[in-house]
Amino acid sequence: MRWFVIVPGALVPASLAPDVLAAATAPRLARRLARAARGEETAGDENTHLPHLDWLWRAFGGPGRTPVTAPYAWRALNGDSATNAATESQLWFCEPAHLAFARDHLLVASLADAPLDPGESQALAAAADELMQGSGASLRLLDHAHWFLQVETPWQIETVPLSAALGRSAYEVLPTGPDAPRWRKLLNEIQMCWHAHPVNDAREARGAPTVNALWLHGGGIWHPLPRAPFATLLSDDPVLRGWTLAAGLAPSALLAVDATPPANGDALSLWDGLQASAAAGGWDAWLDRVPTLEAVIESVCDRAFAAGFASVELVLAGSRSARRLSLGAHDGWRFWRRAALADVFREGVTE
Image 1 (spheres, rainbow, N blue to C red):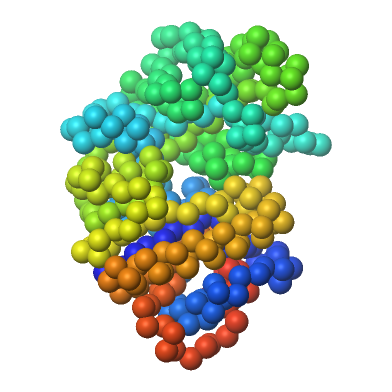
Image 2 (image 1 turned 60 degrees about the vertical axis):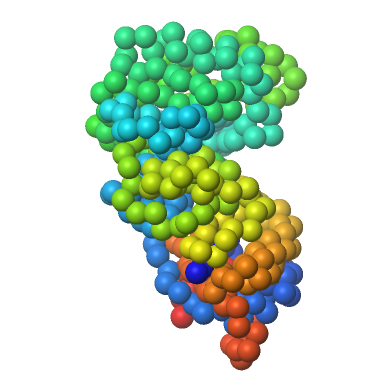
């Protein structure tokens, strides 16, 4: 049995890797990786820009190349409806965002450092939803932090997840496809309404970024997934929890993040501590998190091998690809191959 650990944001672009990785300090991790068995490297969907999601979507047997995320997250967050029959309603993530002015373009920026409070969220959502009346689309909020868009007739739109769009020019990652103009028209009306909204006036007065965009992504219709590649999931990520339930596993398969799963089937963990800094190009912050990654992997290996797992399978992802490495319980007997950090964490290098 294997314990998979997915690490988005772990691979550094090849052009930056020599300088970034020369400063990385993780001696225990380097020793483990030097003895690891190298697995396959898989390219991600060029539209998604999140190879770890592409890798997982394929593992669950999801149809098509682009992962459908929103309807599965919706059901997982709802809890009691997570295992209901399929619905014909198409759901999208529809996340508040900030478009920041750069010299000659707009940058997609996160609100993570100044998130909406419940009152702000309800006020902005009410204003936006009023503008959507008669459009065939409506906002649905599970709480102030989870916004979704429900559409009566499915849209054909290609989108980029917000976490992959952060720090990039908005024009490079805006939705495209036959129904994208319908969404742009709605969004323009919402942006004009929000521009003079009291919520944004108050945020601007206190130095917080204004909310001037909604980021649409991950849309689709919920259907059962054909494969359950993991017996247990140790993650609070709503997408992964939704996929796990849609693959037929019981809610009891959803364990706490810090639990030790039984070695009676493959297990899955997600550690996303590098993702935000990698997406923002903040490589100093990324380096600061590498020792934490080292500690996480050491902890997982210790618990996995004590519980009887045969290996810990690392899936390290960047912006274009994902790389798999196998850490076996008896790797300590292997000869060192080479100092591993610079090779393993450099995107686009395979052996």
